Length: 464
Ligand SMILES: Cc1cc2nc3c(=O)[nH]c(=O)nc-3n(C[C@H](O)[C@H](O)[C@H](O)COP(=O)(O)O)c2cc1C
Image (cartoon, rainbow, N blue to C red; front, side, top):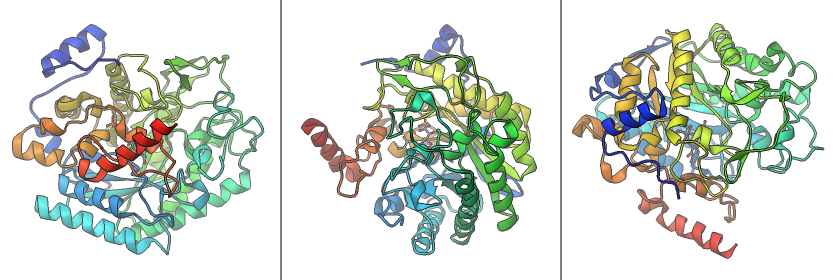
């Protein structure tokens, strides 16, 4: 097993940074992280965001389950002022797994209770929830929909993965068009149950991300930049018109897709130029090319988007880009690069978008790999204007109260720091459960909820 992370101090990390020739920065002065920020007239009380993370623990009808509810109550109490609610399918056929949450008339009361209890927990632990912004990620899982893959483009490099064959039909233009209404219906319900911002998800190779890169799709939703951004544009316009002005329009977007990797960590064989993909040139799928993402971010602002969360990669095809990790998930491979290079790639992409749009609220990704030094890295990035808000994913599952730890003790609780061993992703990939999907969280540091679940997943793995 790889052993990359052996740093005892930020100074050790700075030395590694110099050795690798990358641009990670660290600051012991955490005050920039506790300055408020105004986003579209709303106040965000600090610069910490909890990234969207599916627990795969909804009920079969789409209602948030007990563990879903528990997660958001813990996040609420934790002290981060931006809580980016997880992927929520806008149509049943767009669910990534049978336990992905779905917001509709039948489930809305449970969502409302979850939002209210999250806010109440925030007030109880932090005194005041006026600067708390809680959003929801509206998604269609596209080729990763569990019932059947809904593909927007024939990507030769993804054939043979997740039930997609060379004959899988493309989703039709009419079917795409009809989705606009589904986004609007879900968006209105999300506002009704109390969410403050709405994310039209365009990342991780789900449907709207796939369309962004669909250069080889014929018709009005493929080919030119204008066509590839058409559906998302129509969704933003329709949602903006349908919800009150104080609701923040947001997106989580891939800055860079790259191509699939196979064990032991090699890119799949491919021929250049590539026929599709987003945030990369046709001739170099390993280096972000932000020309189109920057153009799209500029356009989205004219459509009313004021909050952009940047991410990259495809968690099913090459997890190392999106989630730099010390130990890979079971369907992954040892990191083919030093994970700090992956962290730096995230930071640079966010910086490019932030610098080109100084007034935009940009949320950055890539912090969990830095373990107990993530606050110092976030502080330096916010101080230097590289990003407005630091988004944290896996590390919040092990220590949901990490912002309170910083406020009360000036540092994280070392006993519950995420070591990026990929337990959370491993459980997510385990489907052999009576409900078709295991719920996920942090087995090593949240044993109360996930200890037994992890044992079941291991037993299954042994049986296989
Ligand atoms: C268990 C799990 C569930 C996730 N679910 C989502 C999701 O619903 N939406 C999304 O945009 N990203 C999702 N992600 C990706 C995270 O938001 C984040 O981008 C990723 O973990 C990298 O950030 P980190 O290094 O701080 O963990 C998920 C990640 C994990 C580990």
